[in-house]
Length: 343
Image 1: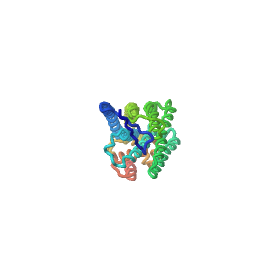
Image 2: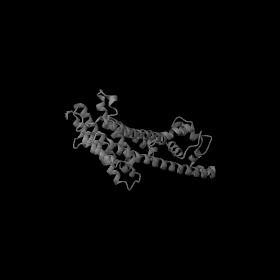
Image 3: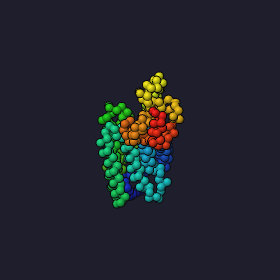
Image 4: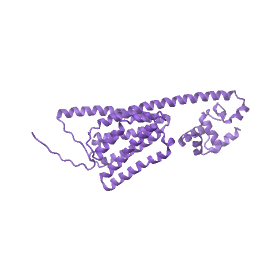
């Protein structure tokens, strides 16, 4: 019996497992790995495309942030399981790419969590504190780039991963108050402990971990399934709310039609633009009418955003639509046109 000794020095990992297979065992291992990878990465790509589609369609940034976070996570797994090794073999950039992906994934996860959990509105003070995490991580990554001491990467990634359980427990605390948060809690039920487990094993060397990442991919797959359901549920709610708004708008238009012109002017003269008229190319929506009224009063975008509880980007989008429908190019033209029509 021949005994072989292998000594390997890994400068960038505290623990990196090596497995030895027989020829037959290796073929079975590759087949199993390719099957799991095809299922996992195929699912990731579908969900990423789906989220980008919903972001474009609904203009809800929660879909964009989740798509970018999942893209970072998928790329990180491709680095860990060796799928990208041939693409970057011999290129020193390969070793720094992991750091870039880690940091970008942390940013997108934080933005997604804040948006999904509605932290920026329910607890703005905590939201500001959470942004210190990526700042500290960036500092330790920078120290690594300056010194080439992997210890700084281990510290940085430990700080970054600690954000997972903190936000997860935060979500548990508010789960009874906001029903949709249960998706977040269930989705990261396995991802959170496994992320901590692998960072402590790979980067800090507290214990040995398997190197095939199968368990983590299964946990991530559970996360994908849960949030896919959450996405569909969120879309249904938006559609239901839009249908409700359309119904209320139709009822309001009918009420306006029943009013005498002079009475309508006394009630709300801007309702004139809800119907077909000789001023605008197309009737305005109820939200556009509200913004039109604010514009005519001289409000700036920030004031409109605060007054109507919508984002500044949404305000800009509505203003562009109003300009197009009224065939004007500026607020001065808009106010002059409304003034001429005595509205």
